[in-house]
Length: 221
Length: 215
Image 1 (cartoon, chains in turn cyan, orange):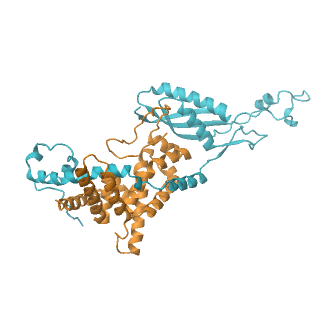
Image 2 (cartoon, helix red, strand yellow):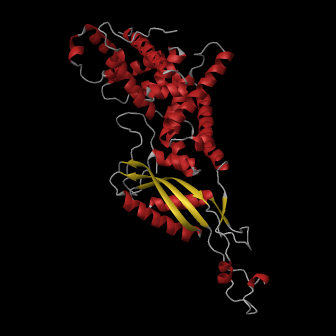
Image 3 (cartoon, rainbow over the protein chains, first blue to last red):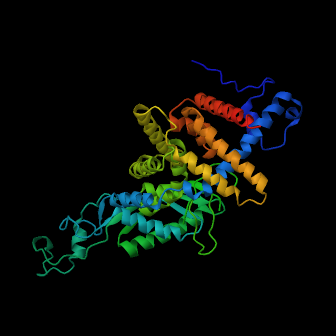
C-alpha cells in the first residue's frame, strides 16, 4: 500500500532537496518561496544540531565499547585463523611422493604481501596460490640426479642409491593488486615480480615458476 | 597502519590513502586491508575491527539503548564478519556489508525484545548518558549561554530521537549519524529504497516538528 510521505512542499520542491541544500546559502527560488523559507528555517536547526551530535558521538568516550570486546573478538579470530593448505616445500618426486617439510598457504601469502609492501605505489590485496601440475617424470631427471651409478653400468633404476638433492617445490602465484595512479604499471609490476620471486625463493625456499599480477584498482597516493 | 571507516563527511573520506608522518609507513586503503583479511590475514582483520568497533558500537548503542546488548552485537557481528569474509565478493563493499551485519543483528535483538516486553523506552541508559554528556561537553565551550543552549538542544534531539517510531529511528540514525546512503540502508534493512526514503522523510518531519515546539 502506497503511503504518502508528503516529501513535496506546496511549491512542488522535494523536501529532500531542501534538506540536502540546507547548509548552503538559499538559491534564488528558496530566497523568495515562502514554503521553502519556512522549511529551511525548521530544517537548518535540525541540521545544525544533528551535525553537532554526529561530531560529539565520535569523540564521546561513553560511546566507545569497552576494550575487552575487541580482545574477545581477536581471541576468537586468532583461534579460528585459516591457515589454508599445507604446501610441500620440496617438489614431490616419484621416489619421494610425500613431503616432509611444508609451509601453510597463509605463511606463503604473508611473505608475498610483506615483499609487496616494499614496492612503492603497490598494495597487494590478495594472493592466490596454485601448485602447478607435476612435470611428467622423465628418465633423464633420474640420470642427472643419480649421476654416479655405483656399478658403472648406468642401470640406476635397479639400485636405490642415495637420495637425490630435493628440488624446491614449484608454485604459481596470482597477485591481485592496487596501484597508485601516479605509478607506472609496467615498472611497478616488474619490480613487484622481482621482489616476490626473491622472497619466495630465499625466505620460503619454493620455486615461483609463475607470478601473475592482476591490477584490480588504481588508488590516489 | 590503520584504516579509518567513515561516511561521506568532510573530515573523513572513505578509502583514501594517506602517508603517516613519522615512520613513513603507508596507510593501506581499506579495500587492500579487506582483501588481506579475506585471505586470512588476522592482523589485517584486527585493523578493520579496531577501526570499525567505535562506529559499529555507537550504531548498536543508538539502536538498542543498552551498553551490554550493544557490545554483544558488536562482538557477534565482527566474529561473523571474520568467518564470512571469504565469501564477500567485492572488498570495496565491506563498509556496507559490515553495517548490514550489525543492523540486522540489532533488528533481531529488537524483535526478540518486542516479544518479551512492551515498553521500548524502558531503561534507556543511553538517553541518560547522553543527557549528562551534553552538559559536560557544553561546559567546555567559550560562550556559556550558547553552549548551554546547544547542550539543551542536543539533549532534546536525543530525546526526540529516542521517541521516534523504531523503523524511523533506525533509518535516521543510519543516514544522519552514520552517513549511509539510501541504497546502503535499503540493503542493510532489506527494504525497498522508497520505504527507506519515506521513513527518513517522516523522521525528519517528526524531529523538526519536535524542535519547532521548543521555540
